[in-house]
Image 1 (tube, protein in one colour):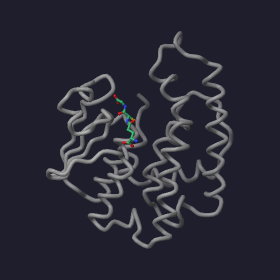
Image 2 (cartoon, rainbow, N blue to C red):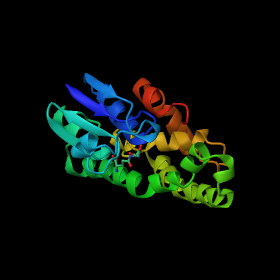
Image 3 (cartoon, rainbow, N blue to C red):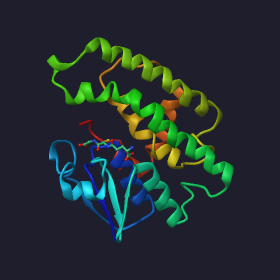
Image 4 (cartoon, helix red, strand yellow):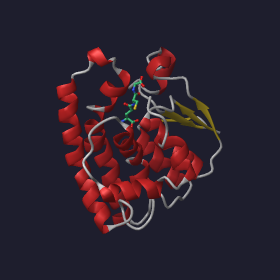
Length: 206
Ligand SMILES: N[C@@H](CCC(=O)N[C@@H](CS)C(=O)NCC(=O)O)C(=O)O
């Protein structure tokens, strides 16, 4: 049985929950780890994941961390087309996964945690406004891709969506001034028709 450790408010945990449900895998979820729950700095947890981050996933007795690689592992193990096997098709998905971690997530992180997790008097509104602008500029890269293909890596839903849509959800739900991104808005609606995506990624911000 698969065990998924980590709070469901983490977008990195959301990805793994969505993939597990998409693949129809039975799993146990220990939600109360990370954030205000703590426990992720305890020796027991650090022995599983030395980063002290969520998620950690255990497949029987095989322990995994790093959400994107966990998603790939599950798809490969269960032959899911969410992560294609053909070399170039896989690269098209992989690049959006790496882009999510290396580019998209840092842009989101300059805006979401201060607005949602800090008290108003703790916020640097000038830095947040600069962060919103930088995030919008970055999103234009997705916007352009979605002018060419209905999904990020081509004509169907893949791990490229799984690793990016929770961040885009935050873009649309945060109380910020948004630039117009019509292709992304349409894609966000399209992906949201998937009930597993909706359940895990289209959630209240917290
Ligand atoms: N690259 C890692 C990042 C993991 C990560 O930074 N997770 C955050 C939540 S999104 C975390 O554990 N934060 C500390 C906490 O929740 O206490 C992954 O994809 O798994």
